[in-house]
Image (tube, rainbow over all chains, first blue to last red; front, side):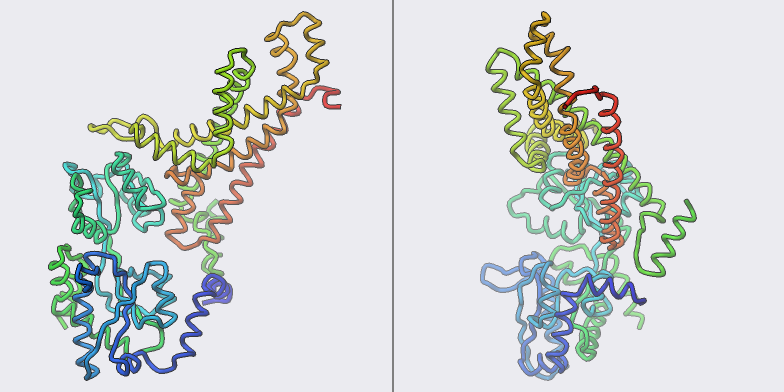
Length: 284
Length: 248
């Protein structure tokens, strides 16, 4: 990295970087020791993200990611040789990275898409554990076979969604992008566009949890994903042991098909990514 | 052009400053379209505002009072509420309720495109300002001049058309120029309802490359350049309409 780029990064991320350095210097010992000593692992997650993570009527956390967390807990107990407890730290997309930096939790386990920006701030665990591609929600009765069928059609989306440019550039879709999800939803209801594009898993979750039937006239189109963005578990930089432990756990998930099972159990259609990973790690 | 594109690409690799809009052909075309849309919005908005403002200015001069009250209500409403709120009200309020921008069941096009909503919003908001500016211009014409016109045998409307309006319009020109600047800048709010003007396209580009700082500079300079051209045109108009001795 040359000087100017460095300067720019420093300016852009000075606040966050400050937290990273402060946290690193304050805690010299690896997170593994801390978790072992307390017998508790603090996990930053979005607790209002059904059916990935949600709190049921008895106050217990449930969901696909909770199942995976429990599996992770069992594996870590085996590695550390003592019982552990999971503490869920509720976060939002806007504050989860900061919470991890400040040591309010030991790891992030949520629908966290891996991006080059985030890779500069936090340590993602490789391999990544899940992925989501773009999904298309339309009124019932619209028949589409592929994304190419959308050529010249209006599709509503969020400003800043990473699907907008590929859809416009490669598929000739007319993207109408609004600032909030509510405006996108309203526009689809008003018929300003024939469909809305969003994270496939977000759309699936929205239909799986639609108790009031607000989307009963709509459906998700079964289109082959043209791209998928991987989701990763994340920890703070500087704990190779913890990184290795978690990495082993994710590899085991892919080998045994744990994630695919959990996804199916909660009604998700597993992404192509999960199948690819299973193929890859089965072979080893 | 190729040389320019190459030098911007080289700049990115050498320093990290990513002006992708200058070397990525797809983005360059999108951004050029964005500037075109911004100018189109500004011109239509300007036309609509002038038309509406002039109409309202005349309606205020008629003897039938309810018509004057109606115009006053319109002017006060649109002058004293935020433009973005008006646009949202038109698009998501009235537009959604009457399904003005919906596609028909068999794919028929909508009654109004998002772009037409913006033009209507700009015309309504700045028409109210134009009405006020022209009123001030008319009131600025000296009473003695009006009396002189009457003395020459002009009727009420004749005096307005031949004597008062030409003077009032010239006196209003600087304020109309300011109003025009506001219209040009307000085209950027079209971004909120997904009209692909310059700011909207810039946002799309920096989502892809995370080059917010670079694109923000490009956007600001774009608007400065558009404004510069518009200002030159207004100056030219002022020169054409110059009356020796006026305003002294």
